[in-house]
Image 1 (spheres, rainbow, N blue to C red):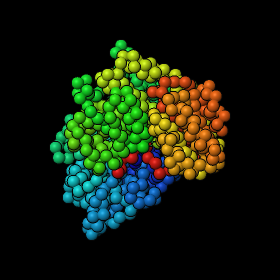
Image 2: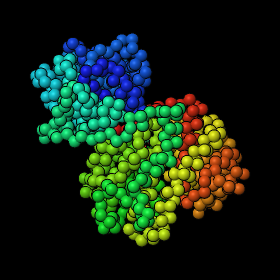
Image 3: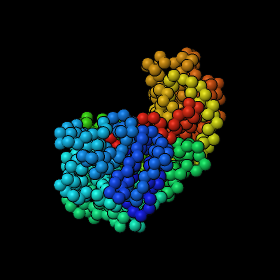
Length: 612
Ligand code: AGP
């Protein structure tokens, strides 16, 4: 997802704009740029490539001024080139307006034709550039940047988080939001607009999240906020609740390994204040549904994308087993258009780490449109999904910088385990059964800490896997979604094709892939289906396949069957997902290292995909 920063104040803007882009780098991008206004002029620097390329350019050719914008672009229309990088300039002389934009303008072709016929020359292949020229065209009549921006917004079909500046309006930033996040960072004598709180955290903790349709006018002394249709809006001031250094790398080599190692603490944080030992149940502050309403629920739908969808699959097994409630897991992108028949006793949850994923937001809005009680399980406080849901549960995982999600997955499973317990204890789960789950959850962080010691073995297992053309990940029951997650991690971070399967499915086709060049990673801890999983391992071995097995420490069978055996602590099945996912994450990390991949910002990926 693109990153946006705008600054107006008394300090030199350029270092603030660049430092802000660095804090947004984790979201994935392919070009970067900045522009400042000074003495009636716009200065602009932009390049394809990483932020450091832009920084080196600005070191050579400084960007003066105390008022400017910057952007990291994740290409949607047009390749990653200098010309397609943002900011984009607008006006007949290409100097009246500069804008940065996140989102997709779906009617950009028609607008471009109209503007070209009116004499505006385009310098890029992007959809975003039409915004700059539209504002410049409106300025020819409006003479006020705020009014000009408000005037052109109804012409834009699609989504935007945009910031505009003009040399004729010194010190003024205009921000507008429709479907792509934008927030105001409120400073003393300076104001910041950004697409993500992590960019403003070093400067202020007071933020105002713009809602769809809102437009803000910022000057160093403050800001005005209006809704483009409803007029003046009373801003709701939020506070950034995590420490600015939470996004720092510290002693770790990469954010991904830092966040893998944070998971025992993540698990504690996700459960904090939500375990009720006295009643052997879980409690949530934000479900906004009474026990009576929850007992009326006849079906649960869990919706997500990518890793969040894998967490939802774990939730399906947990809720069905513990609460005996039917669960449907949906890809958000599919749910929003397939018109699924849901009755009025269906409870919908949308899972999203970022809370800004366009597909997940679209699914939430579709469920809301249908009138279903829709809840969000989200990490990012104040995110769009969090705000538009009827209620929900925050992950409290802290900022997750690595594009490959790790600790958020753990936090999502923790919340889903608690939810299953909560629903179960409303539906006949006994006190003893509930207490067993409570005690397993309380034990889990310590056992997860133990699994971090598997890193040397994961590194050893990375050797054969780094050479592989493809890799299979296999698990059963609760560990089938974890196998899928392990495959996604490896694919995302290393670009090696990896496939996750329910282990028994191996013999129904995937076994055709098995030979001495195809590593098969099995999740085979001591559990009710252990023997069956071992049978599948034997089938792979019989065909010369390389086996990497994650199993319970002390297992005397697996070490003889596997080239590498990674022992996890013995644990109740309900918490085995927490323990099995850690070695898989570390495996992906170490294979990525061996292959020299960009671990925290894998190619083509974005941390939050805010386009459909
Ligand atoms: C996870 O490693 C991926 N980066 C990706 O699949 C991600 O889980 C997906 O885009 C959903 O993001 P969200 O949880 O922020 O909605």
